[in-house]
Image (cartoon, rainbow, N blue to C red; front, side, top):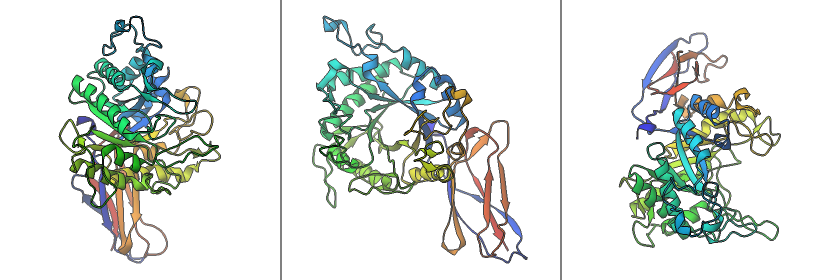
Length: 452
C-alpha cells in the first residue's frame, strides 16, 4: 500500500578494539537489505477541535502518516428516530438527520496535510442499543444498526479514508457489556462487510484492546478481560498445543488487528497477569494472530494474512506530571518502544497525544500543553518520535543499530562518527544528527566506527 512507503534498518556492526593512542577512525558504510516497513501515527482528541488544522500540520512535520480519530456515532446520528423511522435512511450519508460537519472538517484537514485518517467507531445512539448500558457498563450496540452506520460513514468519506476500526477497548466493561468476544466478532463482521461493500480496498480493523486483566471487586466496578483470552474466544482458537479451530472457518472478517500495549514497566515490559499484552508481549499476540489466520479463523479482503498495528501507546512525562516518567528516560523509551513495535511484526505504531492535556493524568504529548497548539513548546520526545533510533551493545564488541531516518526539508542529514574517550576496550560511538523535520526515506547506509 502506498501509504506504507517507509524503510527501516536493523544491522549489527562490529568494532575492533585498539589503544587510545593508536586508534585510527575508519568509516564503514553498511548497506542493509529490505526490511519490513513501519508507519507512525498520532492519536489526540485535539484533531476534533477548532485547532485541528494546525495540529495535523504539526503531526505531519513530526513524521506521522496516520492519525487515529474516534468517531462518535451518537454525535453524528439523530438523538431520537423520526416518526415514522423510515424517514431516516441510515445507510445514506446525505440524510438530513445526520450531522457530519465536525467530522467533515477533521477528515478534510487531515487529508490536506497528507495524514491518513483511521476512523474508529464508538458511542452508540440511545435508540441503537441491543443491550442498554448500565450505570457503569457500556451496553452493546445493535449489529444491524452498526452496519448501516458503517455504510454511511464509508460512503461519506470514500476516496479520503481507507481504514475503519470497531470500538475502543471492547474488553473493558465500561465500553462494551455484556463482555462477549463472540458478539464483538459480529460487530466487526458487520463493519467489515459494510466498508468493503463501499470500497473493496478499504481496511477493516478489529481489536483496539486494553492491555491487561483487571478483575471487578465490590469497590471497583471496572472489569477488563485479558486481551489474549478475548482474542482466543473471538477467533475460536483453543488454548492448547497445538492450537485448534473451535468454530467454522472464516468466522472473523477483518484486515488489520490492533492493540494498545501500554506498560508501566517500559518499552519491553511484560504483563504481570496471564493473558495480558504489554509492549514486551506483542510477539505473543502476533503469533496468535498469525496462527489464527493459518487455521482459517480469519477472512481478509485481500486473501493475505492480516496486518498487525499498534494504535495507542505512550507515557506521561515528568515534567509536567510529577507522577510521570522522567523526561530524559522517556526520551529514550520513545525510540525503544517503536523498535519493539517493529520487532514484534507490527507495521504501524501510534503515539498517544500530540500535546499534553492541561491537567493530569494524560500528559504524554510530544509538546507541552498550550491553550493554542501553535504556541506549544516542544518536548525532547519529539526527536525520537520523528526519527526512532536505538543502538545496543552486544557481546563480542557487536553493536545492534536500528533506526528510521528523516530527510530534512531544505536541509541535509548529518552523520558523524567520533571516538569515545577512556578505556580502549570500550565500543566506538555512532552519532546520527538530524538536521530538521522532513519525510521519511530509506536509511540505506549506516555509519559504524572501527579502530585499527
